Image (cartoon, rainbow, N blue to C red; front, side, top):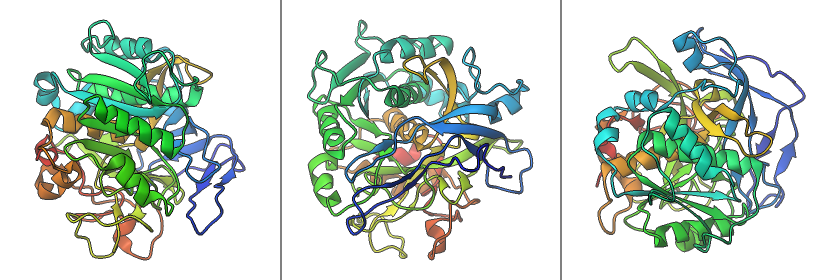
Length: 428
């Protein structure tokens, strides 16, 4: 079921750019956007309004975070538990929590016993001054073990590794940081977390932060941002993302069908987004492609520039196809986050976007164990497809090659090979 926007004149749309197009991304300013499940067969799908946390890129080489904050309506979590429609109430959670995510993806046992001694790195732009205290509030609420600087679990650094020379704060990116930290904690509560903050949202600075994360020893690096593809991507690939033995996850994007970078990098696990709801099935949950409209939903597609990795064998795209795997991203079936910094940081909120799915998958890799030396973990799901929940319904737009934008049995662009069903698809 789809609803009309709260303000029809108010949609923010990011038109992807390439080297053959203008170097400035077209940007249409809007107010709120309505997020509802695109599967018309399910009349009980929740309806919410949401807004983007981060400014959209104005120039080539700039990135936008993919965090979407719910501002009103009733979420799937609220429907499931009979909670009144106050999704924007900051005093209590209104989205899925750790127990929901672990149950949905077969991770309940692994989250309890795995992860000790493993470090997930979160790469974002700008500083969140409240990152550690907000993380503490989230973990305390859900009964997760403390993760602080004092006990050695949490570390925050700038892109050069300094703990004192940090970038300027930014409210929108602070929300993104809270989302990433909370999702890593929800799935792998025993993992350590290193937050690496780039000094700005350019690919050069964010890429430098990725390199720093790896140099600090992280074997799992989550990136919840994206921008337009360009002829520079091959250079970015070799300079920032070619890290054998490290699982690097990247959001596929939130603007519907179309390729983004760095999700298109052949060295990363590109993570698409689903709508996730509780059901009476044996699994207890159902998923379909997250899509609100043709320009609002999970990203996917065929890269214009990036080389196809050897393990990707779909025949419709001669270059890199996005995505590899997926997880929940629909704001209407979103996750609870605790954030207190800036205008958006009022406490509890529900978030969606592939900014949620990327750190979830990074944490699944962390639960699965250290990648083998010299390996590219993006390959692992391709060798273990039976250990994934195949998502077979939904579409995120219109495309000439059907599986680029439409779910089907087996591999497809919006959801890749599917969502986690335990750890089997994330080891190698």
